[in-house]
Amino acid sequence: MKLIGPFYQIIPMQGLPLKGPIADEQLHIIINGGVVVAHGRITAVGDFEILAKTYPAAEMQNISGKQILLPGFIDCHTHICFAGNRARDYALRVSGKSYLDIAKAGGGIWDSVVQTRRAAQQELAQLTALRADRLLRQGITTIEVKSGYGLDTPHELNMLRAIAQANEETVADLVPTCLAAHITPHDFADTPAAYLQHLVRTLLPAIKQEKLANRVDIFVEDTAFGITDAEAYVLAARELGFSVTVHADQFTPGGSALAVRSGALSADHLEASGEGEIGLLARSDTVAVALPGASLGLGMGFTPARRLLDAGACVAIASDWNPGSAPMGELLTQAAILGAYEKLSLAETLAGLTYRAGRALALEDRGRLEAGLLADMQAYSTDDYRDLFYNQGALKPSMVWKNGNRTV
Image (cartoon, rainbow, N blue to C red; front, side):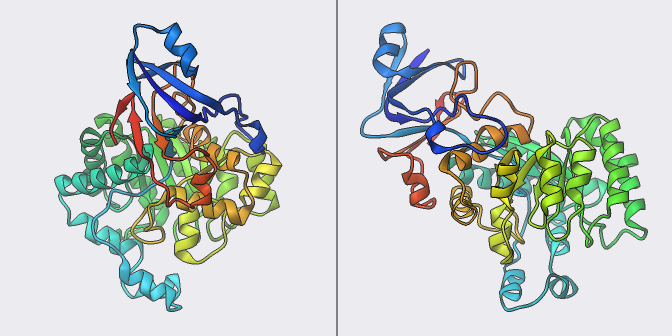
């Protein structure tokens, strides 16, 4: 058992609602606080002097200077398992070329598929672990990682095995998701519906057999998979025991309704969501995941986070780090920018990066600093938590703990 502190401020994120708006005044701030940790989990959080008297046998880990403490961030939507890059796509996009123009020129998702298929498992694992370590240094202790650049059974399994290997090589927790339903591969000589049926027959059982993932994702869009085909795939995946998430409403609405109807854990993107879609999400248990990195990378509008929250939805914020539309990989910067445009309170933004993001992954054991939860924590050298957003991500963590062990 150890007592870590004192911290100038601790923002434990305790007692806050899962859904709807949060005012900054609702944040509980512990001044001169400490955290007692044992066996990777939090035993107690509170006034440092009181904790020192209550747990006299605890090993003392003194914190010097003015530091604030937060839960570790949770990035609940990334594509960090990939090879190569798509800098050419970005240059074409900012010069005015359309998504279709870029795809016809050999760019887009298929370009990443070609480059990723060439990479062996060891290379992909190393690349994924390096990116995960970069996120860990940013205070992100749990990272969802999708496949989706393999697009056939052997290469999708190669990606998922690489993610599992990377999870052993990084301190961060990696949560794998099968996104084989990203697009219909160019080398599949049949319909999108036939491709999805092929995944259900061949890939998903193999994933279950090897225990490579418990989650399935699908890109529902005119350029990917239509509602009818997607719904059949999602229902089949659920029958096989997978939980579901959906790339929804990025360019056109419709995917979010499918996500709600199918009981998906989350609907991610939502830039094209209207009032009908917002109402559906607010009345459901499906988490609305905003991906501001994609909006910045594509030069398009943001997820209507303010309207979603005001309607009563649970809103999480993730980086969508991928080689095409969201290559930044700076979650706090993206969240600060989204907050400025969507007029989110700092409490709402923090909730979207912590326990609400955890709900999108069905992880209830992290995202808050309270007894019994994982001791995933991060500290910043400042005397005011508001500096994190005021500096728009330029202020980096001075210390990060995973399962109570300091890693940064």
